[in-house]
Amino acid sequence: MTKKLKDTLIILIFLGFLISGKSIFEAKTQKIESNLADFGLENRIVLSQKNSLLPITDPNNPEPKVVKKIKVFVSGYSSTADQTDSTPLITAAGTTVREGIVATNILPFGTKIKLPELYGDEILIVEDRMNKKKGYHIDIWFSSREEALEFGVKITDLIVLSS
Image 1 (cartoon, one colour):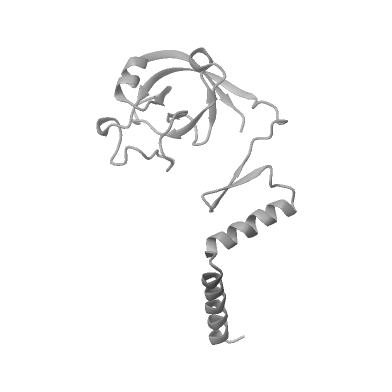
Image 2: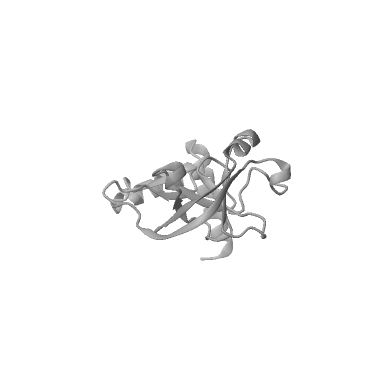
């Protein structure tokens, strides 16, 4: 097939999407959803923002297992300029700040943890980093500086969970 013929086919396909009123992304989304159904994954994976596949937790899946327990200092931080870099609402992992994220230098991004003495069974996720001087320290993100200051500094057990 010649390059000119390939280019012509691409243009015709693109025009077909325009005429049908469906964007290329909608067509791709429908194709992806159809493929998920073909493999029986439609109830286990969700298409987010039309460009990302995210797993859905299987309710039959057992609780994550405890990998290790570490004694740490825990404090709070917020998205204020003096506590972050030039992108205060973006974590070091490239995600948007939100409840349930923590900053630490001792665990890799995506690590799931619990702080049972402070948060019971709530699972937190490592998505940010701290000043390199900090050792066994965890910072929990809060939406305001006041909440972070009110939280203070505590010493507690951190439980690292299996993925």
